[in-house]
Amino acid sequence: MRSIKHIHGEKESHWVGDGFFVKTLISHLDDNPDLNYSHTDPFLLLDYAKPTTFSPNPAYKMQPHGVGQHPHKGFETVTIAYAGEISHVDSTGGRGDILEGDVQWMTAGRGILHEEFHSEAFGQRGGIFSMVQLWVNLPSAHKLTDPKYQSIKRADMPIVDLIDNSDEQTVIGQAAIIAGDWHGIAGAATTFTPVNMWDIELHTAGTTTLQVPKTHNTLLLVQEGQILVNGTAVSAGSLIEFSAPIRNHVGTQSEYSSLPATDTIELTYPATTDEDTPIKLLLLSGEPIGEPIAGHGPFVMNTQDELRQTFRDYQTGNFGY
Image 1: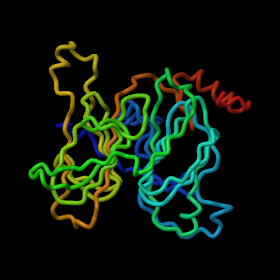
Image 2: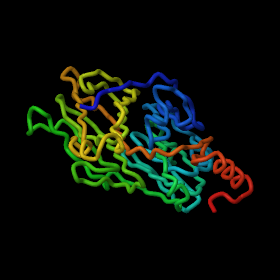
Image 3: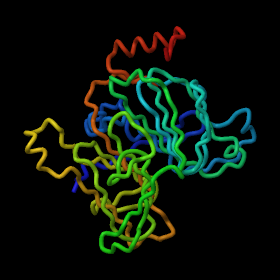
Image 4: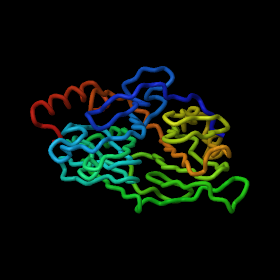
């Protein structure tokens, strides 16, 4: 079983623009010895927006809530809409509304400009808004890849049943495979390095087991509800950091090959929970890239020289070329 190293969640929420009230649970800029990029590689940043009620916006057409045009370079942004809707436009021509359950996977690569606002429909009616945004690093070989946009609808994601460990006839939840591999089932997104991203919902009392690669950094966000993870109670807004992965270079090849390829994580929907209350989780695991990073604001490169050049390019109008 993959042991829990630490449970994080003590950070305060803050506004990004006027549309996203988020708690930054991981950041590549943090020097926290208990949780920094060496523990989360290839995940650079995770902003969690807990369910928040927005009133109807009378200026939803001319002044939508959100963030205006801004640049990114050197990584990918992944936005998951749990409730509410987000409209996206970028400089490559990518555009669309991210509806409840949908995912936007945007590869900034060599440079992209984009904007994110509440959709007109959501701005007009208001309601509960909740989302997660991740930044996923790109390896140096792909830092300057062409920008692209993957609009992933819920209907396009493989959905797998989560079976109760004590009764193979009982389904206690489902997992939507956004990216990665679930026992040979490929996720909907294409990625540059091995990454698993599973959107999990439990709705019935019981225990189920996940299998995660031993070589991956592994994190679990409790997005809604309270759950037992490996027997430990964890509440909404918490990020679980699991023990460090096995590195491929540790030990001899024969020693490594003799180990199981995966670890287990046990999820328990407590019997005391009202079964009308779903528990929502986001499992993140990734093969560490293991390269140095140099980041500032919306740019993440490998060296300070590359970072300075990126700022010069942006200031002189050469960004993205």
